[in-house]
Image (cartoon, rainbow, N blue to C red; front, side, top):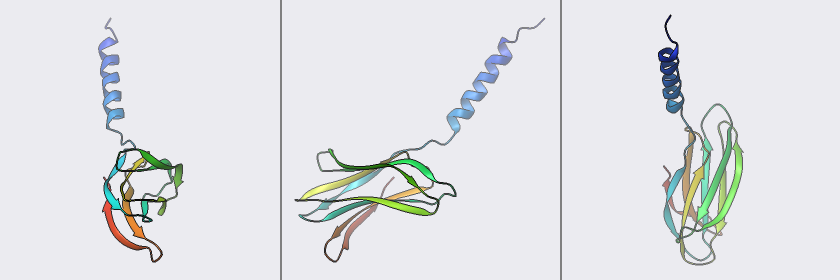
Length: 126
């Protein structure tokens, strides 16, 4: 009579490898952009997938790495987008991070100058 342990151990290893290879939500980080007094820092997320991207959090940071605004958790519908923005009261740097977004969600960080909201700079986040 053979023992089932080698078969069970092999099955457990296969299940572990399959689970580890599954795509997981990853954080995307944007390089910081300079902002001046009254500039608007805006982090945008757009979901290109065919399903809703649930539980997405957008975090804006200042130059010291301190979170200055958090939006979410948010649900981003298929083929739709959302944003989180903040007007900076003085010269600083603005950074952005998203958490919980799927592989088909793209994120960018922009700085706008009111009242015309002309874009001063924009970067892709990875």
